[in-house]
Image (cartoon, rainbow, N blue to C red):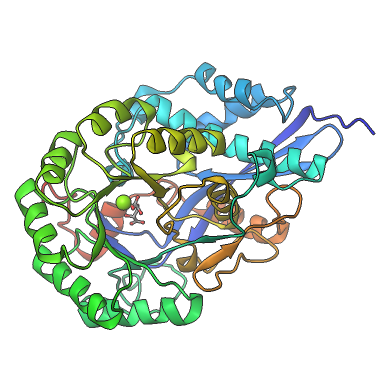
Amino acid sequence: MTRDLTISEVRLTPILVADPPLLNTQGVHQPYTPRLIVEVVTADGTTGLGETYGDTKYLELARPFAEKAVGRRVDELNSLLLLADEVAVDSSRVADAVDVGGLRGVQTADKLRLSVASAFEVACLDALGKALGRPVHALLGGKVRDTVEYSAYLFYKWAAHPEGVTAETDDWGAALDPAGIVAQARRFKEVYGFTSFKLKGGVFPPAEEIAAVRALAEAFPGHPLRLDPNGAWSVETSLRVAGELADVLEYLEDPTLGTPAMAEVAARTHVPLATNMCVTTFAEIPEAFTRGAVQVVLSDHHYWGGLFNTRQLAAICRTFGVGVSMHSNTHLGISLAAMTHVASTVPHLHHACDSHYPWQSEDVLTERLAFQDGRVAVSDRPGLGVELDRDRLDLLHRRWLADDGALRDRDDAAAMRVAEPGWAVPVMPRW
Ligand code: GKR
Ligand code: MG
């Protein structure tokens, strides 16, 4: 039977997802974080799923993009990505003061467009895979591994969101010192089987974060450890931390801001540097790679523009002898499935990928994806291999509708001000 793969409808559903009070250098996670679920429906009734950032500026782009996508075919992925160029970006949105781009590098109109286009690309691949009866990894050339390894993503955190704030509760407790971080890591290991650990730093003065990593090294000898302060340190501080932790770090992630500063650190330490902040677009690659500023690029299929672009990034990294792995931000199972499919197709993936997923108690799927021995099994079912739970989606969408706008744009500094009224995003380098 010939299938009609023409996109006849696109459904965009913004949602708010519960998020625990995780700390980073800009503030704390809001109690609910915005995500956007994209459903692409073909003329023959096949639905594909995609997910991306849900803040207003992404939503504003997704609407015209959806209109342009209708009438295209789900197997026209290259021209679909070009559609993104036709969607006008309000320039005031690019350097939005409340943007957490401060945690994800440069904000450009292109990056915004790609972050939206990627959700459409994933949704089209899901629909195409379902129509052809093939898993997404097969559409990308086929998997080279049956499971993808993830790293435990450790955060300093409060036991609860500030009093008076409407929020879901979590049972992780507070983690504000080395003992708390080790306890969190133990739980990650026991429940999910993770064997490598990344600590989100830039929250406390470097000496305290060094002590936390030392405590992890003692509790989990030989396990790969990473520390990521999101550029909160000066070059000298970065070098001091690298020197003190050189024997236990797999890599240091974005210790300092910008390619020149990263290059200076890289030139003066043997500790590899990873990034999801100074190399976040193809345009940033030449300078960073020729200056030897980074040894591992943490790809993110959302802002790199999809799964095919992620594979292109991986090929460029291989050419330059730079490692590749994956960055994460608060996300749900659709994105975890997409990350797992593309990661399964990259031969030289030598570092466990990041994922926030264990922190998300809510999802829009009928079945949560599971980590076993720190790994997610690569699905061989058609498409992404996940199924939408429409009731869950509706519930989280109703939460978004009920919000007065306060939470529709992620703003970690504003969330922090609820507890500390004088809080402002720290001037970098913070230490
Ligand atoms: O979730 O707080 C967070 C992280 O800090 C996130 O926003 C970063 O983009 O995980 C990211 C990272 O590795 O830098
Ligand atoms: Mg990072």
